[in-house]
Amino acid sequence: MWIDYDYGTNIRNTGSENGYIIKDEEYKSSCRITLEECEKYYAITCGIYGAMVHTVFCGDNYTTVYENMKNDLASFIDKETTYDEEMNFYDTFTSKY
Image 1 (cartoon, helix red, strand yellow):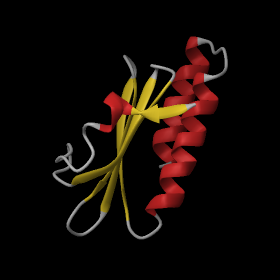
Image 2 (cartoon, rainbow, N blue to C red):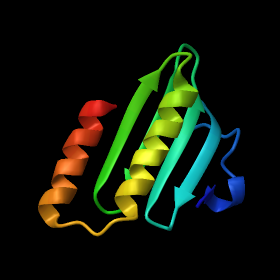
Image 3 (cartoon, one colour):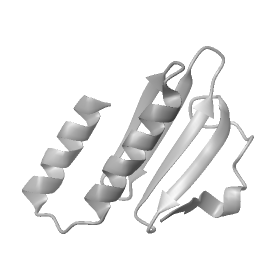
């Protein structure tokens, strides 16, 4: 289950892409995803703790992209993986988004 990161204290603060944070969530203390509204686009930054960080820039489709990224991240976190499977996920995920 995704929960508000740090009880939502970052909402409306400036994010890593200099936009206003409108969503900031964490999954099973293993990964985090943040949605920022920037001047000309939306930025989605996600990370799997200790493994990867990735940022995507979107237009009006940001809600769909954000939810799809969350689903993919949660599915990955929820299953047992080998090192090779993890590396494959990171490559596939960053190519997809």
